[in-house]
Image (cartoon, rainbow, N blue to C red):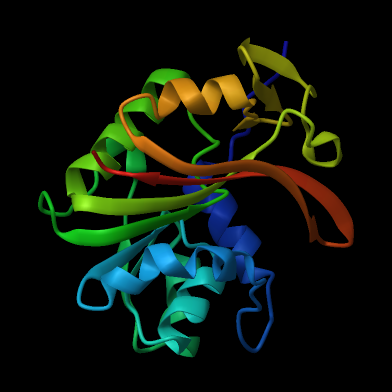
Length: 213
């Protein structure tokens, strides 16, 4: 039986970001392909949900967007405040609800941040994203693929289909069916499986663009 770590999730992520000594976040250009979906949000807030070190926050602020960077880790947010002072930061726990008014955001970016939760929690978070988006607001997201073998797909104790616990940490992997089910009430504009590189290893993921109906 897999044993849960004695280190809390928040402590874990604070330790992760404390080890990063980068002078500034480094982003890839995955959002370039979806610029038409972002173009209409120049006058609205964009929520970077589970922003981590702030790669997408930096990408967006450099292009003139107003970003609210949200993460569980206080350490991650302190790095963002240091390197991207024009971004607003909020420390949040997604499972406790998003602390934003309904219809207050033009877009939400969730880049590899929605894969830590049980299925019902994931559904609740997606529903809350829907709530905070304005009409025709857009979600741009990346998700772990079930083919992400270099980053733990199929490894550990399976708690739910495609949801595993390994070394005390929990992680979900998605197939296309999962995403179509999760976003059944949205208008899916784009969904594709692709590769990126993290820490010199290939990572398999899904990119999804969905619009609030």
